[in-house]
Amino acid sequence: MSYEASKIRLVMELRRQGITDQRVLGALERVPRELFVPEALRSEAYDNIPLPISQGQTISQPFIVAYMTQELQVGERSRVLEVGTGSGYQAAVLARLCRRVCTIERYRSLLAEAEARFRELNLHNITTRLGDGGKGWPELAPFERIMVTAAAEEVPLTLVEQLAEGGVMVLPIGGPGVQTLYRITRGPDGVAQEALLDVRFVPLVDGLPRGRD
Ligand code: SAH
Image (cartoon, rainbow, N blue to C red; front, side):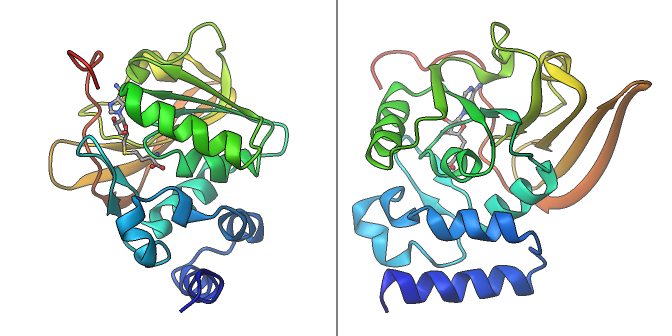
């Protein structure tokens, strides 16, 4: 099956799974997932499954990308912080929906590959940084939206502090195995927390990897 045909099939499946936001579905249609997966796995690019990328990391299942994007409620004017660039796929989807995406990755090699994809796709509204995303990006804070695509054991307070008032953060919380996806909203009277879904993510790891990557 061609990429186009399998992409249409995937979008129909996402609709059945409850992705109703037309802007989100449109963004997934416009980002070529085959460019974000290892070449040997390109025939599976539009299967609704996570796939391995290098450094033992994963590109999330399309349903999870769509769901997290939908629940983040991004607006055209939003500035979004993403923690865990990985392949760059989620950042590319967000970049189609908002003003600017600031994305942080701790592996230099993954970040370089993602940056090359952003250039190839002319996605000029993505700013990247090599670093520990658990510390956020204080120079650019506050963010209207924050999405974390690696699982922390507890909500990182540094990230909550970098959320603008009225801001929304979507992130998986929990230990190895199954975690819970939460939506955190920062209102005038404090922070509200809502459990959304059981998910499986690679862990959020402190600091930078040792040696070359
Ligand atoms: N959003 C990615 C999915 C990435 S998997 C995509 O669309 O492909 C999670 C990523 O988070 C991995 O690349 C991992 O290296 C990264 N990561 C884990 N802990 C991190 C941290 N503290 N800071 C930045 N990136 C981190």
